[in-house]
Image (cartoon, rainbow, N blue to C red; front, top):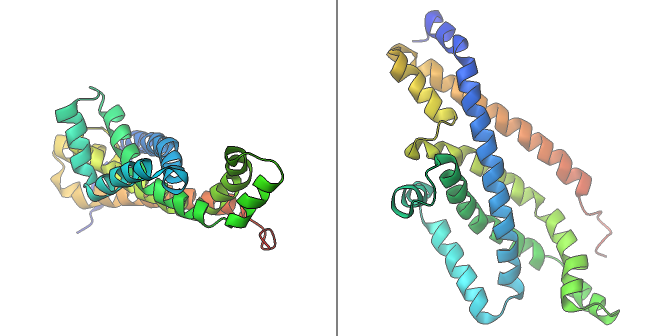
Length: 224
């Protein structure tokens, strides 16, 4: 049963929860950046790489997508020990996992560009690399935005997994709030507040990405 006193407790500690929210947002952006820097080249290599390179990239992606993110984080933090910083470890873990999914988003976007455009660019004197860079990549990036929007939402929610390695993000702070304070009756209120913060973050970023996608959308007659 919801109690006014417990809600007051949550309101009094909103600053503490919002501090965790800033960590969540920072982790999301950092992981997506790592995912993009690795995922876009990986997607391009799956389309344009040679046989061996394609198989290596594809196999790596399958392994990352098939491994639970919590396992990846625990291995990186406790077994590989890539960093003593939980934030750095979580960024790498989420970034690698995101790269595996982003590579498929970008691979599909690249393959959606008509091959005839690449051939036409070559016919007017561009090298293969120049044609890919100036003709295919700009269109692929624009076409990948809906998929990237979905990936943003997934990574944002997956940041809660960093709870497993002790990073003080939003979920961890919420858990600490009622366990360390002894306010066990405030469990429901705390997690409702956390859910509301996740919802607001997701809603605001999705609306922003919607506007960005509309702004950069390829006009209907562009590929005719």
